[in-house]
Image (cartoon, rainbow, N blue to C red; front, top):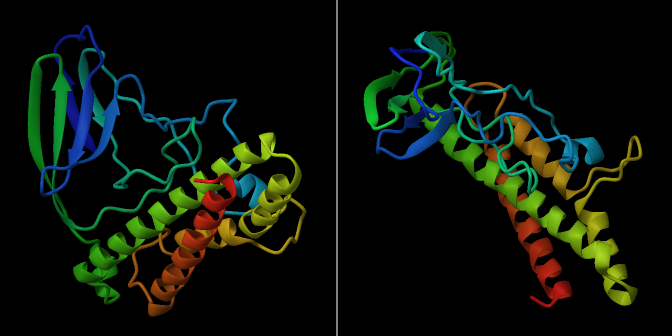
Length: 238
């Protein structure tokens, strides 16, 4: 929970940035609302609505810029994966690992920064999970998040190509889609997109030590997706 005070209502929007120990911006929030706060009504359906992937809770995120004391809560997460052209940041981004961070508030020409020290939950430490384990989990989840983004972008590119394709090209695209996208029919065999989103959901729900099986699964799915992406490029003549 981050408290801030505004003596007067600023003319423009205010922003709050979370920075990591190196000064790199992790998240940016504004009084206009977060980029991925809520999904537009006309947004394309997420893969979980068509292929049984995981679903996360999406809550509005907006800074109050009225005069007085305010409290803003950061969920301790990095940006989520790319979902669609109208929703470039999904929910359930990787949880930040313990370490040094800072919070920067920008109001008009004024800017102020305060340190933020994130420590491990003592209950997790008591269970034997170390800070090194949490750092390894964070790095793994960032890789898998990017994998989810890549498969979602590939599916979006494939669907766009299917709309205009005819003849043999359309047949080849449909065949590729059958290996990437899980049919909406109940109890369908999950395809690559669903396998990838499921892997992401396995290690983002709680603090834990990442097992070797999750790492090996990532490497296998990364290889499979790279092959499907190359196949799509070949069909499209890229």
